[in-house]
Amino acid sequence: MTRRLLRGRTLTFLRWPETADDLASCRYEEDGGLLFEDGRIADAGSYDAVRGRAGANIEVVDHRPHLLLPGLIDCHVHMPQMQVIGSFGAELLDWLNTYTFPAETQFRDAQHARRIARLFLEEMLRQGTTTVVAYCSVHRQSVEAFFAEANALDMLTIAGKVMMDRNAPDGLLDTAQSGYDDSKALIAQWHGVGRQHYAITPRFAITSSPEQMGAAGALAAEFPDLHIQTHLSENHAEIAYTQELYPWSRDYTDIYAHYGLTGPRSLFGHCIHLSERETDALVQSGSVAVFCPTSNLFLGSGLFPYQPHRRRPKPLRIALATDIGGGTSYSMLRTLDEAYKVIALQGEKLNPLASFWQATLGNAQALSLEDRIGTLDVGSDADVVVLDTGAVPAMRLRMETVTTLAQELFLLQTLGDDRCVVETYVAGKPLKHGIIGQAETSSA
Ligand SMILES: [Zn+2]
Image 1 (cartoon, rainbow, N blue to C red):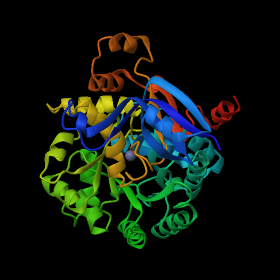
Image 2 (image 1 turned 30 degrees about the vertical axis):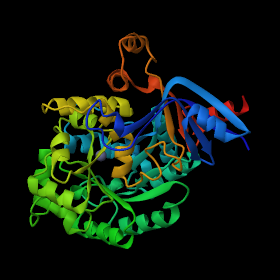
Image 3 (image 1 turned 120 degrees about the vertical axis):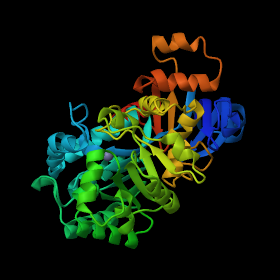
């Protein structure tokens, strides 16, 4: 059996980088080697050492002078919103009613769901993203389509059927009971199949009745290993309406806590306008706040307080995401650029090592999946992105003046996009150009 050995500049993180000079936070090999075997990283280190240990039957893929990083991780996306991205002129609640809900209604059609799921995952791979945490639509068939396509690509994904039983059009509503039953059937059908993980997915408190929130809590109690994903504190009108719907609650976070939906596997999209009490409650429960900078800017929702959250005595766990289709780019590089600006608007900085930590190991830790993804450690799944910082003339020109790794990373996030993605390996297979491209590569 031929094994694949990648050669290039390898970079993987060990911990949070305190500064742009904190090179002890990462492991960087100028001439590195990564050996893939059975979808895992079987060996890593200097190219010469890995080559020496690897023995016979090796196919060397020389990616020099490009950077090899762990595949990028996107912790909050909406698969059914590919045809919603770039819709003009609304804030959150109007944007949902005017654009998003009509688009999601089409996902009752299994053919449509299958087509978009495939295009969605292929677009992510084109951008160097190897893991997504996805909302499907309310329709069971949208989740079946998503997992079928993700499993065919052997991508590690987390996804779930949106539970929503009020405040949306008829074609987009389940009931407390059917939402519970369909979720449970999908868990049985897909959770643990290949690299697929199911997430309990109440859209948000506005579109779930108290009965449905109870049903989501019941699922969480029955399946404590599953992730939970929902939205929290994105927009002022949303927060006010939520308080009207749950008048007994102390605040928005209290609603999720009341139904047993906070905890170390809970991913809360946005968390922009949290009170001190809410932030404390999230920290105490180990919950994760998901920062979606392009979406927060596009919908005018607000500025996520990244550094204040990190500076707390016990930091709030943070993930980073595109939030397609409220977000405006599929690229995690573009997302890092906008994250930097959101933080800069609050008078702070995010150093470039920390940016790339966040998009790899940081996001993997937020998902409690750092033993599988987010690093180039031996034993990890072989999900790797190959990045070319000189992909376009303006970047090549700027590279002439770059002298440090941190400067190069900052250039990648500031000017980079899918044009910098040379290849995306998923479980050891090159899939930037999809399965068709993979077939062509292997027969070549
Ligand atoms: Zn969202």
